[in-house]
Image (tube, rainbow, N blue to C red):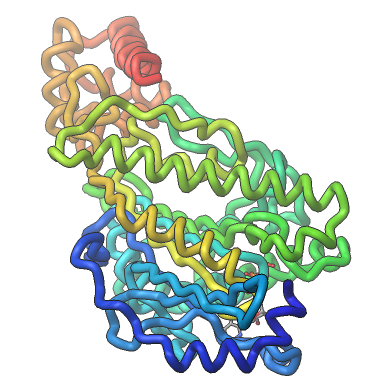
Length: 458
Ligand SMILES: Nc1ncnc2c1ncn2[C@@H]1O[C@H](COP(=O)(O)OP(=O)(O)OP(=O)(O)O)[C@@H](O)[C@H]1O
């Protein structure tokens, strides 16, 4: 088929010139508000020099009217007569064309996430698309731009901690520690914990740039050793922003994820059995992520605006979904915003894979979860603000009651649960007449409530 397409480039160009975009449908308007929990955009990279010299031409075009539509044209073989052209249109957020820089993408997709993360929420950016579509090019460019803005003066009081790792099959490797393996587990708050990974406290742009470059080199070396230029693993950069200001509840987290390439069917013919198995695993984990996000959305944002039954999302099935659990966890207690970048290779030889990429983008685009942190529930300590927690301490800590001001001067429910037991008890003992036994009992009581609430949520 590839040769057939190359032999018919002239015919394809003629049909392209005749193409007139159909009027836009009124339904399915793209939702690009920065307040949405998921914002989906597309980047179409330029054709590379070797692709041009091998006779390839462009098949994916952003519609010039800024409508967020991508027109995709495929040449169709017919039994008798000249080939025809099949055109489809996909409407997806913003479309960044070949002449747009990574800086523009940063300004429009990542920069709006940063203030949200500084406030203690979770921001996620991930790039997906077929092999060779420009995911690594884009994510590493965005990482460099983030490194510059994170250390601007206004953020001087915050502490930045970074870890960079790789997920391949059911294994996780620390890219800041010579690819040492580590574990991904879930703690009692339902948060994902990276056990055994090295997290670096980074103090300057130059330091962050250096560790990002080192991690990228490690990843490239791994793919070169496999005699394979493409990244067959997911690369994750996690930036944790610690704000010492007492009123901030949680550390903000920014995930930058360069997903392994979903492969074009035409590439698969050349693969070994191992490579085919690897590809199948990658495609399965990607489809769990996309299905998970869409199912979560449909359950949280029904037509009536009322939440429906909790969806079952098999996030423990793959390393990737464990890391991304916050994206589709119905019990999440933190605000999450996600920016998805669908990366596209524009070549007319890759239209099958491009269609898949754009279909996923449309699916996510049409679903918009609320992204709100869980509301107060008296049986779930992780939903308590400092005010709710103080009320609980006042009413439930026994006689004499423990002073809420001594035990939780500014903490939320989650923050107090994270205070080590010894410190918790010492704080309780500051209140007149409170014994160690009473303090121990109150600690156990709060933790029992927390564990019961986690069990009930499963
Ligand atoms: N916007 C762009 N402008 C110029 N060159 C680009 C652009 N995007 C990607 N490229 C080039 O295209 C090639 C493939 O890009 P990249 O390695 O980022 O793809 P990928 O999607 O990460 O591939 P894989 O999934 O196989 O790792 C590289 O040579 C890269 O430099």
